[in-house]
Image (cartoon, rainbow, N blue to C red; front, side, top):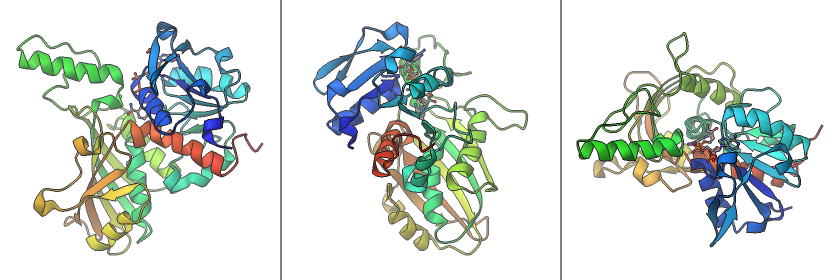
Length: 343
Ligand SMILES: NC(=O)c1ccc[n+]([C@@H]2O[C@H](COP(=O)([O-])OP(=O)(O)OC[C@H]3O[C@@H](n4cnc5c(N)ncnc54)[C@H](OP(=O)(O)O)[C@@H]3O)[C@@H](O)[C@H]2O)c1
């Protein structure tokens, strides 16, 4: 079966990720009459552009999933928890973008380039990781082929679309207000994001880390099948519209040279090495936006740790960080002929 034969629901079709999911389906020539665009009751009757035509948005109710083969849910955890079981009950495979099910034992958490085989044991729901976890595990998976990884330290630089379409508008409005010396309105974050950065992504936990930082740890371990992997991160929101970047230091069991790391990353599916610092060539969010790959550069020996490598990556959070990964999961499911749960 091909994905173009399937009736696909995009839940959250009016949102930042849903919009990109529609663009990707259009790029893949998916027939418009096999797409159901869903959102909240607020958006019912609105239109979303698709392949030179308009799709009418319907309210995502349980019965809206009748006849749907695959439902991509890009809304909120609460919506996923409510609607995913209803869609599964009606025979759909749910590919969920949110955090609702990621750490459930019965739910595969998948980046196809890393653990594609995990789709085979789904029970109706497959989750995609957080948009900072996805590029990180792709890089770690490539590098652990050289030597086992003993520790990972990450600082993220996360774009506002990672929070959704409303945060993107807030960055634009605040930037305009700052330039016009008008009052700045703060709604999406604890502080102004324009001309600023926030060392807080999501709520803080008692241990001083944020939920986003906890997600990076737990999700990376689950995807890489490395339950004890030591990984610490500091997640930072920056006034960038699209594409998350990460500064990553990886410690290995054995010595790894930058050339070995560069070669392993160059051979990794979905990864593109952009690394000519003498000519100021390295990944940047502006260049990664709208692209499918994880871009990696500034690959160098970490001089503070024996057997360490430091690098920098940028990746479009809405594409590989969300909608593209979700569509690639469907490709993997079809390739492995496991659209329906095996048990
Ligand atoms: N943004 C990213 O980079 C990224 C990356 C990975 C994963 N994710 C996850 O993807 C999900 C969506 O994120 P986003 O950035 O696209 O958010 P967003 O721009 O805020 O969009 C949210 C979407 O959810 C819809 N929605 C809200 N309440 C609903 C309901 N009761 N029933 C059905 N649909 C409802 C909204 O529809 P209305 O227009 O009708 O309100 C809108 O289409 C989140 O779970 C997020 O964690 C996001």
